[in-house]
Image 1: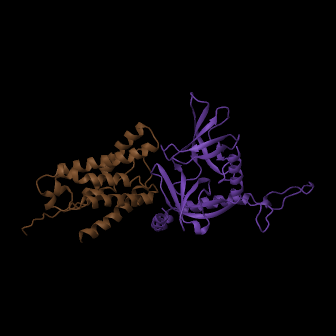
Image 2: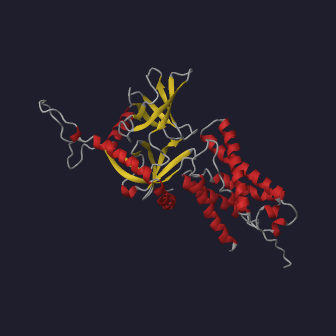
Image 3: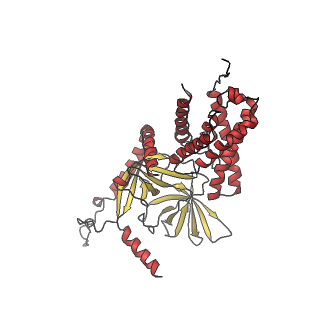
Length: 244
Length: 177
């Protein structure tokens, strides 16, 4: 699979070099929007009156060993993306040599994209949200309830979120974000917006139809997220499971 | 152009068209997936030995699988239709010796009706087996029937267009010349 990845990756790259130009405008727009969001988060925008006396954290503490950093982002370009199959995958032009390994998270400027499932030297294959095997731990941003986001394979217009208890006050237009419970994604990456709520009378759970915030039809650049504290957490969790 | 070179170019073209044109189109519906790549196997010459034909089918399907990252999903139905092809050709051939007088299956070499039957049967087998494999992984019985019918419909339409656009002239070969 590794060698084949390299080969199909190279061909996909050629194809993408042409396709790339047709999406330039959209890519530019989404980058500009992302910039706007990031600029708004700058410390300079928040100014407290002089009279208050409080301790302001100047910046995140960052020593040379980077002990406190948990997530590291690396940008990558999408070179192949299909939506017409039941199990859809995305190929990105960044592989083992450039620091991508299995089970890393992938996000775009607008939100969730998928998880890395296979890598070769220079390419990596990402399982996208539109894959029948994809299963993402998510939560409602407003109230914090946990659920699972899946795709039922029916249409590329929406994905579904299951296991949402009926006690939750959920409305159309609510945001669904990553739960932070998985080892791959930090908390709060937007996954989608609630399109409609399906009230199944025979169960205690809602099924939500969600429109993904990432536009999978024109996404060109993504970021691969590495969890630097993953091994520690994983070892601890596995060890406690064995002790039982 | 000699026949092996023609077939090698066809191999690449069918894969590229399937991956970068047909799979890139936004899906109309869950059930409608346009497939045309396996027409390559149906166009291979008459005189290929069964072992070679079956192996060719497997190799062809596997190549597509590496593009879609689903090892085996397309290789299996391709191997099946490549294996079954000689049986059906023996039944459908119009007159004695047509498979020696012409090089490969086409409208001219087999005639309209037998060739259409040949295409329809193998499209059904290919799509049926492929969707069956998908159905084992997920979906219900309506997914199976709906997808086989819808996909076969769109595939037959595509094959018809291809046959009309790229009409293959077959030379009548005799050993007297």
